[in-house]
View 1 (cartoon, rainbow over the protein chains, first blue to last red):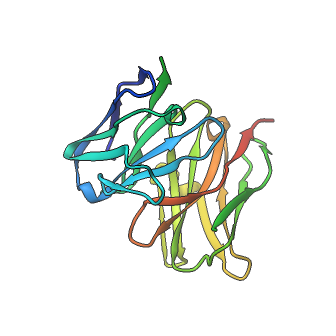
View 2 (view 1 turned 135 degrees about the horizontal axis):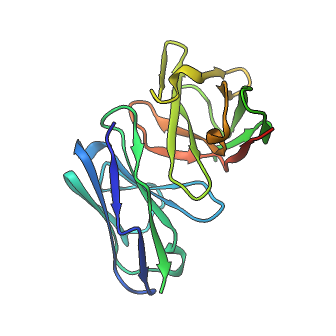
View 3 (view 1 turned 30 degrees about the horizontal axis):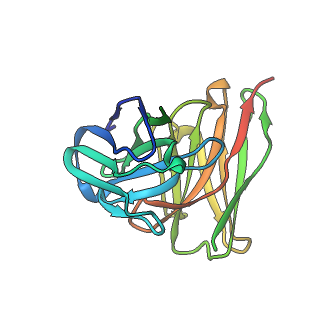
Length: 108
Length: 118
C-alpha cells in the first residue's frame, strides 16, 4: 500500500502567519486522487481540498493545495484562530486508500 | 442538509462481532459510495472499506477477512460488521459519504467510540 508521510509532525505558528504542510507519498500518486482534511478535537474530519488543489464547498480561499507525483503541499496563507487543528492528507490512487499520520497545527 | 449518524454498542467483548449502523438523513443513500473509517485514540485514520452495491464492495485487505458491509435502502442505513475483534480494534468509527468514482469524503458522521474489552 502507498504510505503517506506528513511533515512536520507539529507546526507552531501564530495567527496571521503562513502555514506550509507537506505530504510525501511512497509512490507517485495522480493529483486527481490526493485530498486534504482538517480535524478538530472531538470532531470528524472535514474535507478541505480534493484533487490536490480544488477547494471543497465552503472552504475559505486562504486554504490552497498544490503538488504532483510524490510531493504535495497544503498552504494556509494567513492563519485564523479556527485553523489550529490536525491536518491529514489522503490518497486513493491505489487501493487501499490511505491517510497520512497528520500534522498538528498548534498555537505558538 | 445531509446528516450521518453512527449507532451501535460502545463495548464489545474480545472475539465477538462489532456491529454498527449509519443512518443517513437529508438525502438518498442511493448513488453514493458509503465508507467506514476508524481512528484509534490519538492516532491517524484507517479506511475499513466501502459499499456501493452488493456487487461493488471494496475492503481494506488488512481487514477483509473480518469485514462485511451492507446497505438497507428502505431505511436509508448502511452497516458494518467486524468479526473476531481484539483490543486493537478499539477506535472511533466514522461513516462517510463519497461521490461515486471518488473517495472525497464530503459528509461524515460524528463518530462512535467502540471499546473492545472483557
